[in-house]
Every structure is written in structure tokens, then in C-alpha cells.
Length: 416
Image (cartoon, rainbow, N blue to C red; front, side):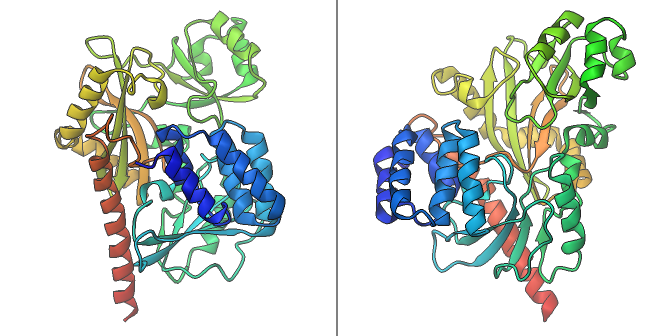
């Protein structure tokens, strides 16, 4: 565990002039560090080093972790005007391989946070920013393997499409190839994953504001607007993350009240599935699929259907941690039970690395909430509170490293 004092020491050692990535800021936040103090220190350094792009990018991450996203993105834009490449050196030297991660501008949810899972490894991470509307600049930073870390979104689709052609004959192995990343879109994933035995992937459909207004006014029925659906529904704006503006809708008046709070024009709608267990508790499981193999990341438990790990009471309630520990220890049994569904997901998504949030219904079906490659997976939880957890995450870390080593070895053999 890295304490607030230790995090301060990291910053004081180089004044934030080296690129840190998300991992140390997340670790400090989990450990209870005051990131306002950290941000203030970075701002003080900026007075002397205003043209240091690494410092600007560090400040962008720190501010976003403090929920100051607009200001954080302003500093990110300043940093990208100075340079596009940011390197996190391998903690274990000498580095075994250099992984180039293509990323794009946006929030800390906009790209795969590989530095959190590979925080202590012999893999050097080189993050190179590619901006919408621009061709992939050549030459790129030196690398052994390339990983496309850009999350799918409406805004990023043209960029991902441009990378399909740019990387088609790339001289080294490309992981999470760009042509498959749009499959993680909420509507596309739910459509793609229909018909898998014992997997429940609720049909997610796009709906415009005008359509919802008609539903609120009683001019159309739910089934007319959303094929096969009825109340209750789940609504969220297209592009929202981490449960932002996600709401359960039970009636037409609820639709009207929901729209009154938001300005967005496009939404995702899906049927609400009651996934509570026999005790009335809801459980959300995060799983990483690495080269098709499933690894448990966490399980949050709440009496509220809309679960986020940080507000589910996992830190405060020992019985919930006990349930999570038992589930994580028994995860191989969970995998055996759902092996057919998990294998089908991996085969259809065609990604080397992805993260899925899911649960299990009372009927024993695997219930999918979301699937992408941007979910945070880390081994940073406080050992005194979660003594059972980090060991499981380290299995995922080893699997990711072994996958990268194997791809590099195969690449070298093919070149001989």
C-alpha cells in the first residue's frame, strides 16, 4: 500500500516532471491522500515549468480525480499541444518489452488504464495520443507490440475506423484491433451477444429525445418505441459512464421527470432486470477476460440496484467483504458454471483484453451489464481491509504479462 506520505514523496522526488499516469493518483485516492494538496503542489511546479507536458498531463489526471473534469481537460489540451507521447517506465528493470498504447484525448475513462494493472511490472508503457481527424503520424515511438486503448464512443468511431486501415499491415502485433472495439458499444454488444445459452444480455436500443417525449405524453406505448420492451426501463444518455444519469423508469410520468433534468438528445434504453438475490441484495461482478480467460476483479454488494463499488458499503460493512472474499475464492466454480457463455463472449467480441460487469440472476443465468476495455482493474486496495483481493488481481496481471510475452515471442519466431 502506498500511503499519502509516500505519494507526497513520489511527487517531491521529481516535482511531477515525469509522467505518472493514472495509477499513483488512484492509489493515493484509495489510501486516503488529499489530492487537493497534490494538485496544489503540481500547480506550484507549473509556475516554474509551464512548458512541461508531463507536468500538465499529471495535473490533468489529478484534477479529474477530484471531479474537476473541465479544468482537467483544459490542462490535457495544453499538454497535447506540446507533445503526444507519454511514457511510464517499467518498475522492474530491465524492461522485457515496450508496449505502445494508442490513446486519445478525453476523460480518464476514455482509454484503457493499463498502467493500473501493470503498475509493478517489467513492461514499459508508451502512451501515444492520436486525435480525431488526424492521420496516424509516422514514425511512431519505438515499440515491440501495439495495443489500441481507445474506448468506443460516437465521437471516437471515425478515429477507430481510420486506425483500421492505418494498422492493417502493421509490422508488429496489434492487440485489441480497432475494427472490433465498436462491438463494445452498449447497443452493438447487446445485439451481438444474443442467443448465447444461459447469458442474459438485455436488448439495449438507442432512442431520441423526441421519441421519449412522445412516450411521456402517452402518444406511443413502450413497445411501439422500443421493440419487445415495457416498463420498467433503464435510461441513460448515450456516452454516459460510471452510472452518470442512469435511472430506472417505471412510468410515463417518470420519463417526463427524467427528461426535465437533462439536455441530451440521444439515450440508451433497456429493460430493467431485477437481479436481486433471495435476501434482496444486488451483486455486481467485474471480470477481466484476457486472451479469453476469465479473472475476477471484484464483487460489490448493495441493497440498491445501481451499484458502484465505492458507494456500496464495501469499506464499511465486514459481512459484504466476507461475501466478496468467498466469491473470489470460489471464482473457478463460477467460471465452470458459465464457461460456455464466457467462451462465447470472448469469441464474438474478438478482443485480447476486455472488462465486463455482470451478475447472476436467481435462475442462474449470467446477466451482462456492460462490456468494454476501459474498466479499471487494479491491485491497490488496502490490505488491512481487503486482505483477500489483491492476490486475485495479481493473477490477472500475470495473465496479461504472459499474453504479451507470448505475442512477442511468436512475433520474433515468425520473423526468423
